[in-house]
Image (cartoon, rainbow, N blue to C red):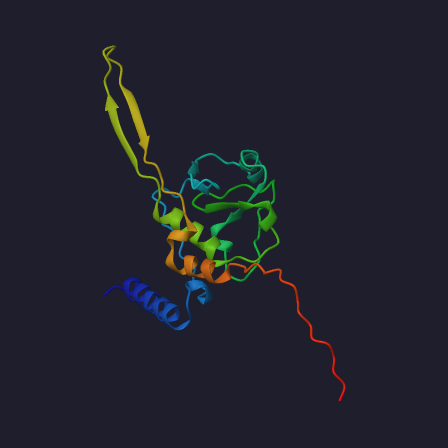
Length: 187
């Protein structure tokens, strides 16, 4: 085996043992697996709707945040469970080959939860598939057609771990009844 292959196997084995021994979710492991991009020249942004857009040209975070005004951008490599979000500043440029995620502004100072990571993983697993083909109209000129498949939206209730947590965490409404008190008796 080549040295690179052995190193990769050791790294993969070490990662698997950490995942298996560290608890219920992958969070306690320090490794973050980011999806491999086919082209490292494009920065990808996962929007709140689940849409993934690629940006070939240099673009800063402010231009993207104009599309979704109440959201901020986070680099996917800075996402660590039980740590705070590290939002990009408005004048910071997106780096080619990186994946960025948009989160609501109300979460800017909160801790990263497994549900936040689920959004990232679901989007990474359901990356858009592009079908390209050429259509030759009667005029004789070639027209290129790009079709992007509809991506399923993340529904937390469909994930068994989260639906169980939602069921357990539902608040119970108190019943408003009259409290019956007995008089104090002295002996």
